[in-house]
Image (cartoon, rainbow, N blue to C red; front, top):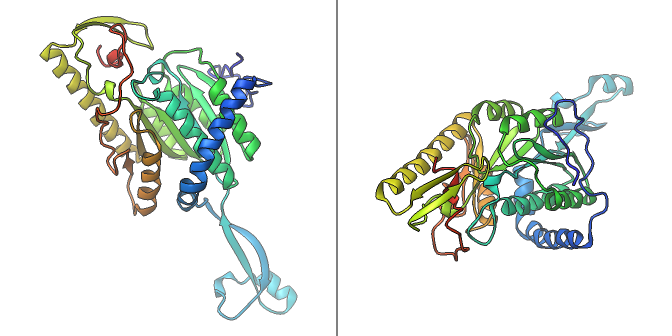
Length: 348
């Protein structure tokens, strides 16, 4: 599987797709995602997307003869002088946008105890956004990352490009296991010379988030999509267990039934949540909290609507409304072996 090798500074941002000819099974998966997400785009997302992302300004359309009621300040005096009668400039809204989809493929994102893994939700959500952008004639691009940039697809228009983007989401096999937001932001700053909308999908279980995210937010409209699984928020009570960090490979043995261990885990989860919310608020980043239990549809719709109504300040939405409440425990749980648990990264 060829990847972009994008963490090396000399690499060009123009990269080829990981598969020159997609196998039949991959094409069937792309088609299934297109059909499923196109229905969502057509029925629920199209109007919300367009009302939210209205473009970045006004662009000149034409000069026409002045009519009673026209704004005097729009008169083009040079043309009026040449023609001997008043003409006005007409502008239209500049609709074209660049949407960049950033998907975390690190070890911690490839986890889930409900119907989907976290990165699977991010992939399908990226497909929805890609098709919504294409329908509105916006450019859309993709970056997939771990501790390096695994794959980068420059932003372009068209349905064919959107389907290629979905195919790449399905076919790129990550080489790295860790998480480097800084390396990813470096690549994004080279890929995006103009202000763009960046959907950054990650579990944000990494250190040193503030500087790279602040740098990205200075130039672009950054929307953090936080991927969560219920088992990462409540330590499974399974007695003694060996937990492995999916990114570093570090192993620790703990007694998940011990009250002190469970209290420490809960305090760590609460502290991580508070720090992340405080960081996003300080940087002015919107946040969409997506749970493997509830999916992304309601969270994304809640975000579209909340941001459209927002007079100022950042928006935080989740599957249960404006504040993104934590997932419950009603959904069926996948079997989890005692040697690997969602607590892997928080237990150290």
